[in-house]
Image 1 (cartoon, rainbow, N blue to C red):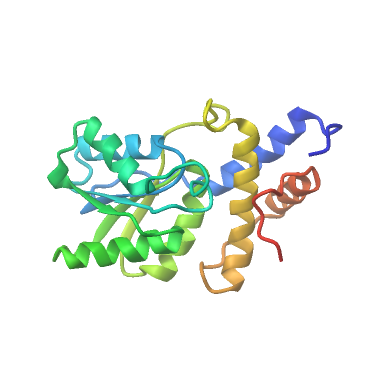
Image 2 (image 1 turned 90 degrees about the vertical axis):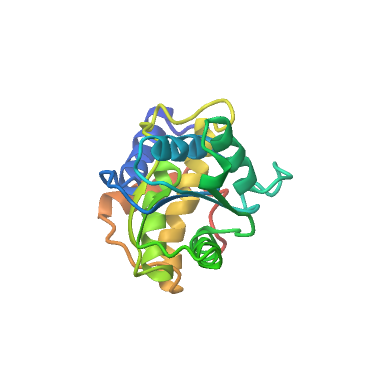
Length: 220
């Protein structure tokens, strides 16, 4: 990252990406909650809250080890998520664990296969991820699980509230820029549906890449 870039401007441009990536869809009751694995255990905490709140009777924790966790954890994301949910009071018989997936598409595909193996056929789901992953999940589910009635949700945290000791702002911006880039290139590869991207959002992405926030971008 170039040290001469003003921090305030970096945050301004990063917030533009955040606001674009976060959909903010209103909650509706569903057949299950699917907590999609990541390095942020607050996703599991929030997913458990949704089950407690009666939004769905079943929790699927999905995730093996992906690009953000394979070097920092030795246990699948789903198993960490399930333990968080159990510690929050969700009974084990309301939790299913899918611990083989390594990306967003596999989270969805393998969760559907797990449910089918248990003779559970859902029509609707609340898909829970990090706030800045909402649009990527939406774009992916429309390819992988088109018939599913779903909404995307995330821990209710604003941009400046989201960073913590485990995930500092520098990491948030680096990862978010990489996830935005995947919206661009994965649509071209047929992995996600194309998204309408306003010019000011593309400008924010270009600004951040030029400023050195490209550590999680795919090399193309």
